[in-house]
Image (tube, rainbow, N blue to C red; front, side, top):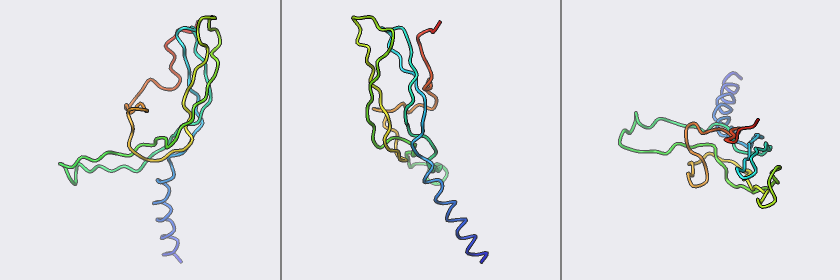
Length: 127
């Protein structure tokens, strides 16, 4: 019975890291300079950890890309930014993740930096 329990425990330990990359609710700040304001919206985005390894110790001349938690598909939503003058388009379109997976970071569509400005950053001073 102990061997069965140990087997199930090891099996669960191996499965858990595979399921930690998932959709998560976050709040992001949208800004439109022409309107002079920032607006917070709730969206779903990918969050979590992917299994990684350090191949440098085993194969120092082989380069491997590490997996990151990223989106498999996005949709786009549009909101109206308040405070825009009549000659400015008040609508802002932003991406919302629909599915997630562990894969390579695509720098064409994603900020792949180690530490970005963060989802709550607003460059417009709010007095």
